[in-house]
Length: 276
Image 1 (cartoon, rainbow, N blue to C red):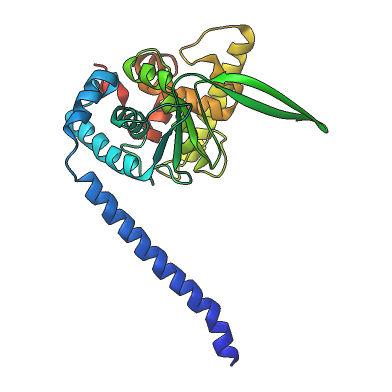
Image 2: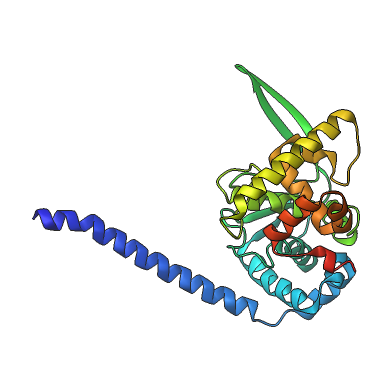
């Protein structure tokens, strides 16, 4: 009797493991089918017209990107807010900019959330903070935000601007989805999951040093290729440098070579090759 009672939890664990393994196998088979499916012809037109970075990618990377986009669009719910209508163009441009960050990274298509809310333009959000027992509510205009373990929110006018202009160092989709990569490592603290364990020590050393430099530049009013907003927190630093890495790789590599090298390893991509 004791043996049977002790076995029940073990049997439950074995059954859970078996079901979870089957679920993961089925999910990967479904994803592989999506990745190998023919890409709708209109996607190419949208990408060529409205995602400038796509035109710079080598052909094999373009194919990998559109393959990942198929999975992303199938697994995420992209919902319009304030009367905004989500069509194929909206889905394709959000998916393309988000999937460029993970096109070479091992991972799970931004796990932990499903919904992407899209406003037609910059929207007003409530900010709540506390001073002791006092609750202080204010509002601010936003182009996007990423809720921890919750949805990504985007303003369409900034999405389209970010896609069309690949040189200004600002891309709201990349910024917010960099936050989603960041939170995969338990908390949004500027430390995403890295491809290799041995990379963490050097990542921390380089990013901590560079973050302090940016904080000092902000205090001194000195401009840098990295937007000053990155100096507000380690999480924002990671997101802002991600934008810079993809859109201003030459300047980032010249001014911050050690930082560029870390992001090259993190994303397993070298945007310098696209800008030659």
